[in-house]
Every structure is written in structure tokens, then in C-alpha cells.
View 1 (tube, one colour):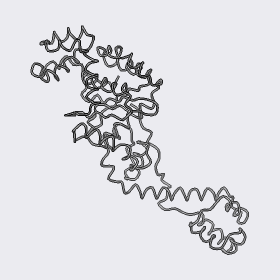
View 2 (cartoon, rainbow, N blue to C red):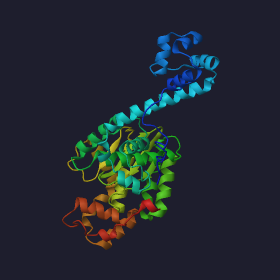
View 3 (cartoon, helix red, strand yellow):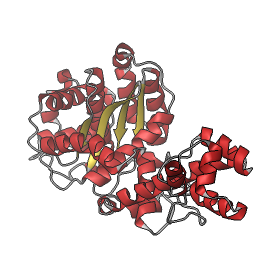
View 4 (cartoon, rainbow, N blue to C red):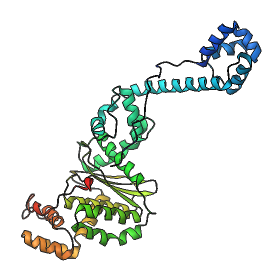
Length: 370
């Protein structure tokens, strides 16, 4: 699994909790030399007021002033420049820390302990500001406000369409980011919808293979058409089964393997494929347990997936399948895994095939360990 580079040192032991302006060093030098601020002002060509402001850190010590100070007090200009840079950097860090303190509650929204357990975040530090800074680096955003702009709107749209209320933004955003990190590392060709559509029969034929065989082949076929397919371990609270989106020039399909059975995996995969083929660059998040779907695009994707796996010319025979032996024979005839047939029967003929009836024909998958 891709791992975010978030183990950078946030605050070294020597970092101060206050900013020291270069003027403090200048004041000490003037005392050592027995020189007044007025005399220094005359020698460097500045007003006494400006020199006083320099000493108190109220104005920047510019490179031009640094050159003048080198001539007058003998301290190298590069030292003054470095002191000024350190001063401004410390001020910025302290301002940022004050801003981050206002977002301490954000930590409660995110699965921090789970990210630590997966070794995506380090175990420390314990202070909230440093942890927030690490999480911003993990999400690759400058602020919590930017994070909300990126994730709240698409998530709210998905929650509204799914009618599912117990999926949480923080875990969902974390799951999406984990997939993004992995997808960005994958090599893909230019997006080619025609080539992707032509590969559908080959992709469908993979359903009969075990996970360790079909996963690399599936990813290779899709990447050749400009589609990165990633399998990301579910994050507790996300309740997501899949998503399609565009990341850079790539189309990305991210699957969670939430139910760990072949019928669910393949139905979700071809559902997402339809969004990609349909030229839908909008982020499409599929929340598990969705009900009363009214979005035409989602209904079309469901129909496409069902028809790709079991073409309409064969679907009329489903009602006549009354035994596991019949299911196996039918699946072999049309070239798909029997578990996929069972899943379809359970959805469309629940009286004859109630849930759990025939589940032993479904293959358990663990795509995260292949």
C-alpha cells in the first residue's frame, strides 16, 4: 500500500516559541562598540526612526541594509540575511501554529489512530499542532479550510444520493487520499475510451481467476487505456465501495473491497468502468448500503455492470436456475464466476435465492495481499 511521506520533523528540539529579530543582535553589537542608534543611522544612511524599528523587528532588514551593516559594524551581510530569514520563518511558524490551534477539533474527525496503526503517520508527536501539521502534509493541503473545500462538496453529494447517513467525512476523505497517493504512482498510458471499451470482454474473462492472478492483469489492461485501478483497504467509518475521478491526466477507479466477495467486487468494478467510459470526470463516490438511487447516471452504471457480467440474452434464463449445480453450469457456459450469478439471483429473485443461499459459490477475495 502506498504510504504518505508524513514523518518529517515538524519542530526540532531547538525551535523557539518566540521570534528573535536580527535587530536584537544589532543592539548587542552597538552596545559592545559603544555606538548609539543615532550614530549608526548616520553611518548607514538611514533615519534614526528606521534604525529603531530595525532593532525592534518592526521593519525588515533588507539585503541592501545588510551590505551597509557589514561595512559599518563588520558583521558579514550573509549573517544578517540569515538572521532576517530565520526571524521571518519563525514568525510565520508561530502564526501558523496559532491558526492551527483553532482547528484542534479537526483531529476528532479523522482516523488518526488508524493511520498510525498502518504506519502512515508516526506515533508521535503528542501535541495537537504538530499532529495537525502532519495530517495537512498527508492530505497535501495548506490548511484545514482548503481540506474542507476539497472534500466536503463531493462527499455531501454522495451522502445525499445514497440516503446513507452514517458515512463520515473524515474517514471517507482519508480513504480517498490513500487511493490518490497510490494512483499518482502508477504508470498509465493516455486515456483511450475506445481501447478501454474494446478490452471489456478480456476484463470480464478475469472473473473466473483467483485474485492473485486477475489483479495484476486487470491493472495492466486498464493502465494501457489510461485508467489507474487501485484497491484501498477500507477506513472504518467511510462506508465506501468505490469511486471514479480524474487525477491529473489519469482516470482513477478506486475500490475498497468492502464485502470481500467476487460478486460485489466485479459489480462495483464494471459500475465504475461505465462512469469512465461515459466521460464523466466528476468525482463519483459509491457509498455502501445506498438505497432509493434516483440519479440516472448511477442507474445506468448499475444496468451496464449487470449487462456486462450477464448479457441480456442470457439474463432471461436466470429465473430457471433453481440449484447450485444449475448455477455452476450456467456460469461456465457464459464464462463468468458462479458467485456473480448467485449475487444477481439474490438481488432479482430473493424468494428463491434469499441472502446466504448459494453464498458458498461466492469466492472470498483479499486483493490487498496479492
